[in-house]
Each structure stands twice: as structure tokens, then as C-alpha cells.
Image 1 (cartoon, helix red, strand yellow):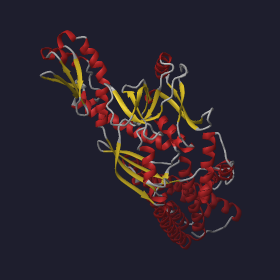
Image 2 (cartoon, one colour):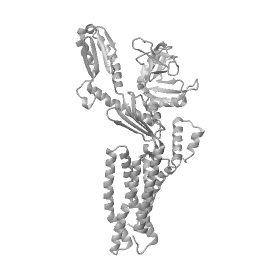
Image 3 (tube, helix red, strand yellow):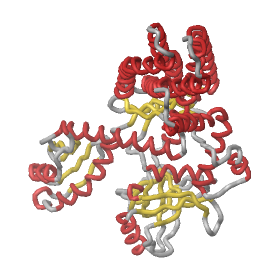
Image 4 (cartoon, helix red, strand yellow):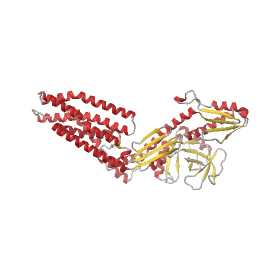
Length: 555
């Protein structure tokens, strides 16, 4: 045991050194964070400024720059509880169903007569037929375009409920399809919110579905809940519509299947547009902030997928010289005339943007449009002062735990206690190194996990040292006593830490939020404490023993 191979010693110290190097940037948190943000901004935009270069120079690029991500309770940030208006999707489904139903009814014009879509509540499609005697045929035509529900709970059920009342054909989504639509809408909303938050480089947000239609959003580091609402609350639905003309006000009555929308940057200007868009943002593949080559003003370039590019090409080819409106969230961004056919699948959005607005718009378009509007039920801004107080309290708790453990080990085991204390200090450094490496988020419960680990980390050393004491009582030599002490304590160390590690894994698997934060630091602390107790402490003792060769030892 006391003859540890050289390669084994080198490997142990290499692991310790790597862990401490990874943990070191956390001692210079603000400086490293500014460096990382500057590097990310330069890489994303390809441009640099004196301020960005100054921030990049705050930390050497050849040193590790990984940091422990601080959670909302430590760093401060924004908290939102949003409710998704899933009924919006029902209305969109009815609008998209209308052309197909219209074509189906036209094929039965001899029996149903003329057809006309009537005003109806959101989520309901009402079609009046001129020959009530053909209602059965109209209902059959509507049911023929229904599809089986795509969900585990809606097997063998139809997507549509169809009924006739005198001369009125009424179509709604079935209950099974509404439930399936709700699930899909929530999944899509959560994913798009996550993309939007990730796009701006925010670290470790918490985005979770709560219940049937609510989403919890917590983003550390943001200055206010209002800033977060601006980022994720925008529907960002981009559409391209043919322009019919201009209107004097929003109250002007448009023609059938036409809408009146205001200009986003021309006060008092309204446009009459065809309601059905030529192409939508659903066909966008990419959007990037840019500058207009002619005016030098910030703009956004976009690129369609093949389907959208074909639609765009066909329309612009047939309508050269006609105005074409770019609409974002029910407002006309611009309505330029088509100078030539655009068949490359890409284009540019210009307007009175500043640089930040063009970046934000590109982020929203890349992330995709929210399927439905969100209303915010709760919004809170957690100031960094609260986090600073929590960090200070955690530091005090960790310091007290350190001092207590160091004193206990020093008084109880003398020189061997000193070795255990050195290993304990290295253990804490390794915990921060691993947390930084894997990008885990440190929360207040996570600090509690580290403090708990400090108390538990010397348990293995206590077991070993007590076994060595027992072996010394049998009049064995110090070398043999140390060897047997480690060998006979190993199984107890493994068993005790394995059961705790299993609990940490279970907490991480079934828990969420603070429970996960606690389980992460607890699990990492168990692994690093076993490593330092079995390998680092033993290496320190063996190194000391090799140099001093004592005839007797006192533990």
C-alpha cells in the first residue's frame, strides 16, 4: 500500500490540479464573466469595439474561463408565471380549415346551394347554405375532411364536431382534439420561450410547464421582469400580405376577407390587406441582423425554406410593381413595391430600427412565433441584493463549518488530522471545479449541499484513522497499520457514500428547482470527498512516511 506507483501519484495530482484550475475563475467572477460575454458577442456578431476588447482582455484566453452559474436566488433576476391563451389556436385552426371546407362544399353546390361564411365565436366555424334541404350532404362533406385525433387519449376519435342547425353548418374542434391541441400548444410555447431565452445568452433559465396552460419562467441575471416580458411576450408572427390599398383610419370597413392594419412607424397610416397571407414566418429558416446596403440603416435579413421560397418566388414573379406588406404581430413593418421577382429564397426587412431592435427582431424570428398569446399572472424582479445576502450567509455557514471541522480533526488526530484538513480544502476546490465544468447552477439549497458535504467529507478519514488506531493496538508496525487501516475501512466508506449517492440521484431524477440544486452539489461532493479521502489523503500520508520513516506514529 505504501508503495504507490509514480504514475498513480502523478495522476492523482493531475486530477487535483485540473479541478483547482477549473475552480479558479470563480475567484474572479465579475472579471471572467465580462470576458466571456465579450468573447461571445464578438464571435456572434463578428464585430468588435474598444469596450469589448477591454472586457476580453480582463482574463487570459489560455486560462479556463468556466464559471459556476448562479441561480435566481443568488444572482437575482426575473420571475414570470404566464398563461397561454390556447383558445387562440382554436380560432387559427378554424381559419385554416375554411378554404378546404369551402372547396368541399362547392363540389356539392347542386345540393347545398350557395355558401357564405358567417361571423362566429372564436374557435367556431359557421357556414350558411342557401338550400337547407342539403344540410345532411353538407355535414357529410365537413366530416369527410376531419382526421383521426393524433394523441394517446384521442384514439378512434375525430378532430371535428360537425352539426347543422336549419341552414347553418357549424364546425368546432372535438373535445379530444382540443386536449391534443392544448398539449401541442403548450409544448411548442415552452420550446419557443426556451429558444428565445437561450438566444440572448442567458445562463441556466428555469422554464417549466405548470398545469394545463401555465409556464413558469425564471431567468437569473436579467434586470427586470419587464425586460423578460419584452423578450418572450411578443408573439412575433411574421406574415407577408398583398396590399389592397390605404385606409384613412382603423375603423374603415374593408372588403370580404380583407383586414385593416396600422403602420408600425408611420403614425396615422393604415393599410388594407388581403387577410390570407402569401407566406408566413413558419417557412423561415434563418434571420440575422444586418445593415441596409443603400441607406446604412439597421435591418434584418431572412431566408425561407424551399416551400416558402417557392411561394415567395411565384407571387413576386406574378406581381412585379405591386405593393407587398410585411406584417409583424398585426402591424405593418413596411410595404415596399416589388421591383423584381425574388426567387432566391431570401429577403430583407427594413424599417426605423436601431441596432438593438434589429438584433431583437432577428432573435424572435429565429426562435419562431408563439402559437398563442401569453398573459402574465405573476411577475417579480428579484434584486441582486437578496442574492448577495444569500451568498454572504452561505459563505459564513461554510466558514463556520470549515473551522469547526478543521479544529475537530486537528485536535482528534494531530498530524493525520492536518492531512485530512488539506484534503478537505482540496475537496471544496474540486466541487467548484466540477460544478463549473458541467455548467450546473448553484442555488441557495446548493450551498447547503456543499456545507453538508464539508461536514461529511471527513467521515471517510475518521473511519480510516480509527482503523489505523486499532491496528496500532495490535502492536503492528506503522506501515502495516496504515495499510490495513485503509484496506479494512474501504468497504465501509464505499457503502456509506454509495447509499447517500443513490439518494442524491433519486432527488435529482424526481425533484425540480431547489431540490435538484441540492442533489447536484451533494452528489458531486460525495464523489470528490471519496476521491480526496481514499487517494489524496493516503498520498499525503505515504509521501510523509517515505520521507520521515518514523518508527512509531500517533493517530
